[in-house]
Structure formats: structure tokens, C-alpha cells
Image 1 (cartoon, rainbow, N blue to C red):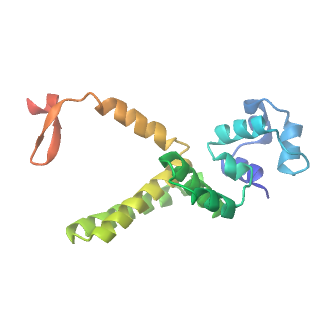
Image 2 (cartoon, rainbow, N blue to C red; image 1 turned 180 degrees about the vertical axis):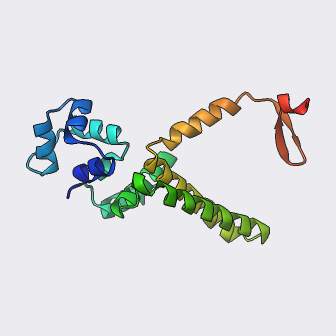
Image 3 (cartoon, rainbow, N blue to C red; image 1 turned 90 degrees about the horizontal axis):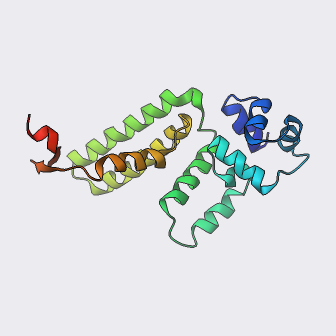
Length: 178
């Protein structure tokens, strides 16, 4: 099964729903999924956006090529996030039915971070922080939530926040007067 069909089925969508959403006929989408016709680049972009998956995954760019291109220079956070999402889709990890299991992976990695901090083990701390990010990225795909949008939203909330640090913890201005 090609990636177009795989993602659609994983999201629990019908061909008709997807076709209507991106502005193609159900017949065209069916032909794309059967690999009897290649979608135009613009259509592939619409599908990637609609499914919230990297276009590289839908275009079925070999992971070896993606790794090679990635190794050519420093990756941006967004490029690294896309590489992680591709990796997770290639291994059939992303699945809305397994959201609770992916959430448990996040909490498991948090526990390992706590252990690393308690033991002052810098290697374990770095490994755990990386693993937490990976599991959060995958969880966000399971939940069909854009993690970068969440991060931008959180920053918008805190960027103008005032307060002060008390015993190593930032306390919001409004909480200082309670």
C-alpha cells in the first residue's frame, strides 16, 4: 500500500472526504493511491498539508536520500521534526488509535529525565530530553496537532509576561501578590 492510502486510512478518512477537501475528484485520488497516476506537485502539497505529514513521506522519497540530504548541513528544528515524522510513519508508529500508548512513552521518558537529573548524569539528561522531544512530536501527529503551532502559541502567551524568579522558579506578576 502506498503512503497516500496508508495515511488516509490511518486518519480514518474516506477517499471522498479527502478528494472534496483538497479539490480533486474521488476517481483522481483513487488513481493516485493505486499508483496509476502521479499527482501534480501542487496536489501533493495540498495532501501533505491536509494530512499534516511531510511531503517527503507522501512523495515516497527514500529515507536514505533524506538522511543524506540532512547530513549535508545543520538541520532547522522544522526539518528535524519532519525527519522524525517520516521515521515514525515508515515504522507505522503514528496511529491515532495508539495515542494513549504514545503518551505513556512521553511519561516514561520524563521519568528517565528525572533519574538523570537526580543522578546528575549529563549523558542521560541529554538523551532523555531528545527522547522526550521525539515522543512529543509523534504524539502530536497522533493527535493531529501541529507542535510548532503549540510552541508558537505558548511563546505568544509568555513573551510579554512579567514577574520575577523566586527560589529558581519564575513567578508571574499576578501570582506575586497572593
